[in-house]
Length: 506
Ligand SMILES: Cc1cc2nc3c(=O)[nH]c(=O)nc-3n(C[C@H](O)[C@H](O)[C@H](O)COP(=O)(O)OP(=O)(O)OC[C@H]3O[C@@H](n4cnc5c(N)ncnc54)[C@H](O)[C@@H]3O)c2cc1C
Image (tube, rainbow, N blue to C red):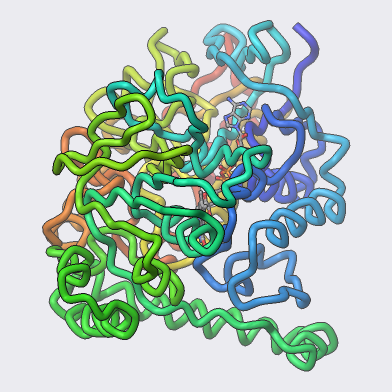
């Protein structure tokens, strides 16, 4: 076993890097960031498909503590966001803490010594008082099991594992899926491919994307008068905050937005039969609302076929839709999303009772304030259950969770001083109460009532991914750790008066 640290952070996307910066700011320098890949960046390292860009404006989709006056576009592309995260790693001196090429394969809670034992790349590697799991909500690609796919003679890849060695130009390509990634890929590759067959199980609602270059004058202003960048961020945030009520309490108000999306389609798609195939039958917002001003024009081009059915089978080089339609193709691109409600890292975390987090979540994921689970002391998930957003920046949620992490560490220090070992374990009753309240609020939301099935819902149909409120509410709920929601576990030995005083004052 190679050493002990105060905190082990897993992952180096926005969540892991954000946690690292926050730890340093809290004066914690005894930590490592374990990343399985050979570079930082998470989502923005792995998703390099043509057309990849954020769909929340860059001035909001960035850290509040690391403003970037030079965003080139209102919705910046993947390369620029990745560069931003590399810059954050340098500017906040995170590199010395990074251990790249380090995949955490197992974690086990040692209840005697009150610490986590971590295996990296299959071998015991280190121990940590606290584990911050920032392995990403959308980081494990999901490819559906399609009969015959293994025998397909052409190229097959997922949007998040783009094969840059394969030249799509002049090829016949099947794109499977019509989610956020697929609708960026289709217009980016359509002009170059010979034929594009799009398999669409359910059509998305697509609003126009108001993307434009940020002018040199705007950038100058943001650089020299940082308040202007702050105001811009505030405005972007405020607008989205006001929209939340319609998603969570009054889905009927979304009818107007549906009309905007319908107009976006009608402008580009003149063929009534194609329009019918592309028109959703569920309330807008039930699935993630997508943004594109180029998707529908691409679908209307003569080299594109929209199959209004999923991919059912592959026979040699022929792809077969669930509606029986067929096409000969050279390559299949899966834009079929990620393992979301079955968080893969959960199988690798063995808690106090000897069972895994995945076993404890067999009826669905649940975590106190999106962060901690009963029986898994000093283990915190960044972007845990019910912290996702339908309409705003995930960075806001990550930063709120980092407030919670900072307070959690302060509590541990106060309870454990001087030198005593202590851990916090979320009470089963507290997790259940939090989860009940979240699910109660969920009942009225568009995600649960809008008439669709989506990746927000788990196998039981429960929404374990989205936060049913504003980011302000979440920030308030995660400002401080409420010790009444935790059991304080101590290593064998007497409690000092300083410890008792800290508990009494908490
Ligand atoms: C194409 C795409 C576009 C998106 N656009 C937006 C947007 O516009 N706005 C928005 O709010 N959100 C967007 N998202 C959601 C996005 O995932 C989050 O905003 C955010 O980037 C997640 O950061 P993260 O650090 O939690 O996870 P990730 O960025 O996924 O990082 C997780 C990291 O953990 C590492 N890891 C995983 N398991 C292990 C392990 N066992 N051991 C070691 N390392 C491990 C991974 O390699 C990865 O580097 C988008 C997602 C995708 C896929």
